[in-house]
Image 1 (cartoon, helix red, strand yellow):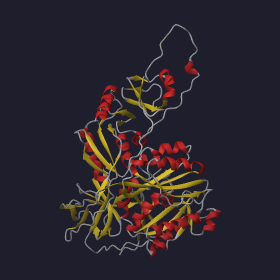
Image 2 (spheres, rainbow, N blue to C red; image 1 turned 180 degrees about the vertical axis):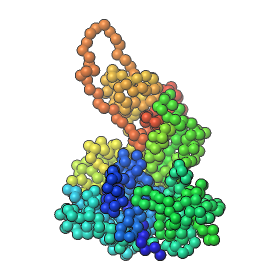
Image 3 (cartoon, rainbow, N blue to C red; image 1 turned 120 degrees about the vertical axis):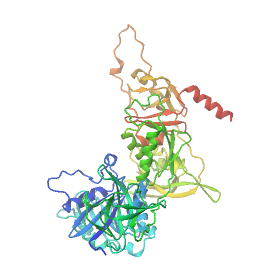
Image 4 (cartoon, helix red, strand yellow; image 1 turned 135 degrees about the vertical axis):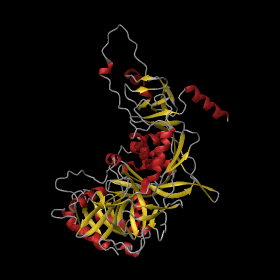
Length: 611
């Protein structure tokens, strides 16, 4: 059995310092040379991850400590990317549970930890950011213990070692009093020792016939598709004849043209990788996530990794707005969209794609608005252009009863604003579970229908002066909680095409808040703002001031218009109503009505009333 390998996953809530701690582990094991310039959060290699400061895609790296090879697996901290979490935990033998010393365990901590216990992984608890002014480490450890009890952790898991320190400063200690005094002269040595001593070595047998399960896919322009995973049994070498066992039941003999070993943040050609270690295998063209590669003399498939079902769906369609193709998009047709979605399905196991009601539309189902929004934003940056409708939750019928996805929501808000938060969420059919003070804030916890969360974030932020933080995680399916009020405000709709003028904005400023600045080109049916009342209003936002021969001081030099409200992809998805579309292009995110002409919208409204 391999005794010099440790496979450990790092799990944490968003922004609790997980990727920063990995930076420290890499630096203190000499992974980077003295000449290398290394960015912070080096594991967040994706552009969107760096922008948002969160881990979205699971990745792994290797450090060497006193002859022990430690495979570190960085997992996403958001429940919408649970498909990534469940795959990579199958490669680990233990976990580092990272918890913020002030915030304590959060809903997504619970989500990932629950998955870890389902895989019987041994935990090490790390209380990070001990240097924060509002740190409360002992209370946080007690909360972690309570969480372990809630999740039915076994006796062995409850005997977890605890470390206190700062991942950013690069030190950890088991002595709480020493941690409070600061990290001078300390490093991550004791944490490395605990990983080697507490995380069990793999029990996989290298003398058995090969068994390798694919958990991630990568691509190289030189060798093609690379299957990444853990060798659960036996050994694999370049040139080996193997059996490819598809998760769909197909079976065929293939050749492993090459094997990659992981070294630091990179990979290199290897001559052999044995059971218990992680590696990449190339040469198998049609391999997918969840497939097994096995020895020809004993072709046994491993269990397919169970992924939670999607809870939300959207309809993507070819962009048919008047400005289609004007924003530099290179991929505009349904064929382009279909090919890109088929490519995404190979690596995104939590995504489902079906043909829509028309030939140029597709129904995408995922784990939440963030999961779907990440895909849409990625496609936008790649040059794709399309329209997307309002997200819809996926209902189930159990024993004749309609059930819907329920989310566990945590809101940290100023104490004097909690009443407003409870009132807003009450209109969304949320049920209050508990309230407790957390320093100067109060933490309020709810269960709320997933459809009740669509568009609620902006209302909560407005009610709390932008100070509230919201986190939610899938709780399970529950009985349907009845109708929920939609967006309370109407929208301002452009009546014609042209450039937005200062004169028109100034005259319409009492009508509501605008989404477009002066000079923006708009078209008929495009949503340009939010009405101050509950009905939609068609406005002339391109109206120009009539020229006269009477001199006057320029009003524009003295009048300041409020800044327009900006939308990213996720904000727009949460904002739109049933009869509206988010137009996503390479350079713009626009909102529009499904029917651009006012006469068509009125006709549909009359038909609904007569029915």
